[in-house]
Image 1: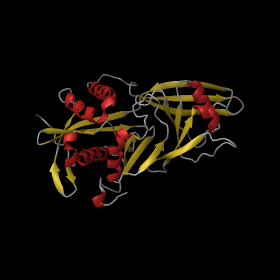
Image 2 (image 1 turned 45 degrees about the vertical axis):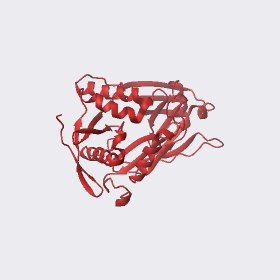
Image 3 (image 1 turned 180 degrees about the horizontal axis):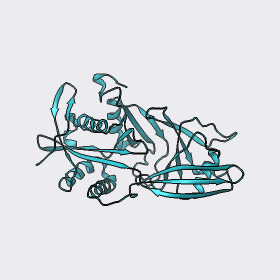
Image 4 (image 1 turned 90 degrees about the horizontal axis):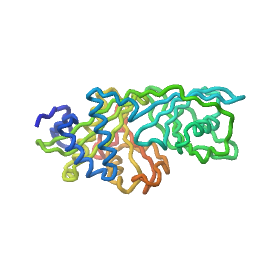
Length: 316
């Protein structure tokens, strides 16, 4: 086995040496076997993600298959014009769109959201990212504050969930044009972790230019046989170090409120990663995570701390 030693992981009271091998066609099935034990019914999406990653590594330009960014121009008669950026991902598509709203858009946010829902009939939920606090329309609850995402060198972004049904009564004569589709720069890294030549975990890291200062953990899994040997801490530490190496200021990971992910949530909390986003009813019926439909994001500030579980203090 030819593995590339990329990180020494300090786990609590001892130093264990792990070897991390980049995911390739040769060890992909090893990674999938480990991932299947954790994600079970999501395994097909995991397999598609790994395959997409390997195809891109070979130079095949699957530009908008995983993520797509669209600039949407809105012309609201009698009110003004606005341009917003809309992000869609394969995991959330076609139901969810992330929308970046600026400080000086002349179109009221409620009208803007209605126009976007009109332009995207399959979308049921918008997640607005804005540097400002949004007030509600008189007599109506149009959106819910669901958390914050850390800023780069500036203030954190406020996140609001806007549902299609909340916008049904808000009408406006809007002309909407999607001016272009482009693939945001998305760098992915997947590694199989070995301990004494035995594969124990797979790690995943995404860095997206929509949030260039945040490294996102993705599809990381531990072989259940090694769950009690601190393999989880080692795998997470390795992923965090990869994010640091990419210049990220924060490390975030997303999960759901499903009982199937209870162990993962407890693990992130054990590692002193506070919950910064909770979006209720995010996942649809039929989604395997919909038993408890919350979308949850945990975060770690990489500028002020290491990845320290409870025994080492919070570090936040």
